[in-house]
Length: 200
Image (cartoon, rainbow, N blue to C red; front, side, top):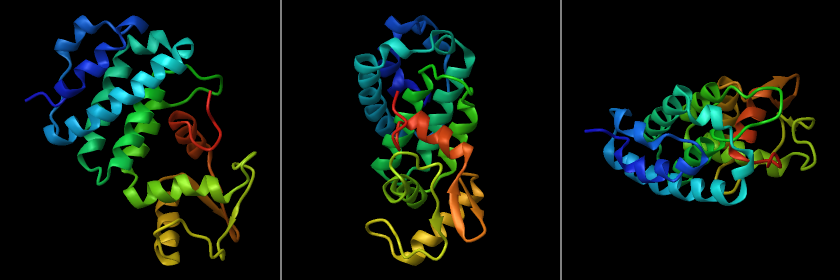
């Protein structure tokens, strides 16, 4: 069965922005149908926000391209291993972010979606939590000491530290001496998901 079917109503809402909904019948993906349905409700909400608040910033050419279709399929596959509603919301927000046009430097949307797919729920919590621990004006110029006792709610210091290592393996953090710093790839994820002050 086509795992994209639950997302079709949300995708059809993008028709006024240029998505040729007549082509949806050709879109197909094998994935967990139940997880796709859970993702669909979040995608519907994110697309509604997009239509209301960001309609003027839509990348119409991208929306009509095969790249958008590929990212929809990737989002459904990422949802298969999502353990929480927070991760599903994050995937949905990233997919909605893919629809937007951003100023240079160009975002690699496919790469960013692939990184988001690889993030565990705990790594996602730590990644989002870093923006509360770093400078709110420019978190990318700030750093977190390796020896810091900081953590995010609900995680032990050890769990937090292991998640930092995982984020490093994903390319979202880099250790420079005795501090952790966010990378350019982390900026892409933050921009696409509108966290850390990178709203349009």
